[in-house]
Length: 442
Image 1 (cartoon, helix red, strand yellow):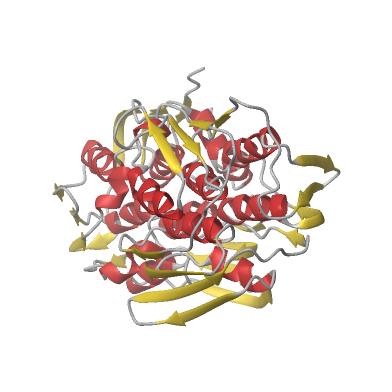
Image 2: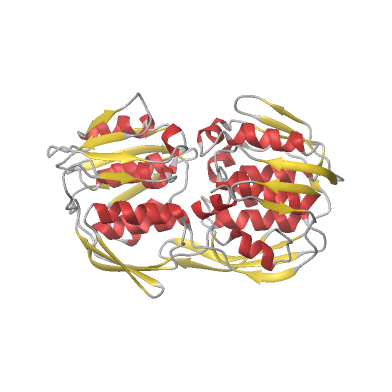
């Protein structure tokens, strides 16, 4: 059902503390690794998001016992390549690219053909980038067309380690190969462009044999396969990508302050903060601590009347790829022109985000210059919208919906924003938290 929200007023000033839903990226990795751990794993604070539910459902179809006990999920694992499933099963990853790409890495030794599907948006995304390296391990793929879902995979009993070069900066592609490497006897070597390192940190925490050599622009990762690991307990920290929308709302609001507690501030995730601080924001991390390899902390942010335009360093792109829509809103508050380059990956997400973001900015009165992989945003720090704005036909992309809500609350106008249920993909409590800050949303 297409549920729309209406927003007619800017948000008033606030000064408060909140928590956000659990980190989606870590949750999906934790579930998949627990499915292969030896014994009963307990995971706390899993977000109630559709992407996480899709992952749980896929693992259950593969024979993994998963129970919810109060705030904990119990996952019973039987070791590497221990899935037990019926012939002809179909796994539906829903909207989750992370679930779909990573689970293919777990299936390279499957002894029966398995079909992987997804929703309309996911079915348009590129899977060739992960099919090619997984074929090198020995897996066989059956595709309806060259690169899109649905895809069927049949594993091999002669899995071999590979050498793989990941040039995109995709943590999903890198992690899928890392999971596949668990099945391969010998050493898999990955030369990977810098990207999120949650999987590497998990491997270290679980004592899976891994060696990482960090270079300036890439990492060399070596994994010794065929080594079982023990079950584990894990408390999922708050999701940084969800926090980013609330951070920018606070920046753009008048006389407001916000503390977001217990958030994953892994250095490979916080490119957004580095970019916003380059623009003149003063976002601080406090109460930092290490948790099983990850860095957890509280985020403090205050309103800013005017920000500075920037030429965004492209080396921060992969560490901020999910936050660029909201960064573009911050660029409105600047004097001058902000330039963002090498962002073709944005158009390979749930929707063509670069194009849609430019259209939304134009619709609210902000000038942009758009190319296939870059955008210039002409700052308008005194922007005050008084007209009607309707946002629809954005392929139910959760981040486009949330961007639109933040724009409405920050710049005014009379907004109708369709597909509010898209937030269930990653941040089910988004509207509830926004309302707790004082937003009037119908």
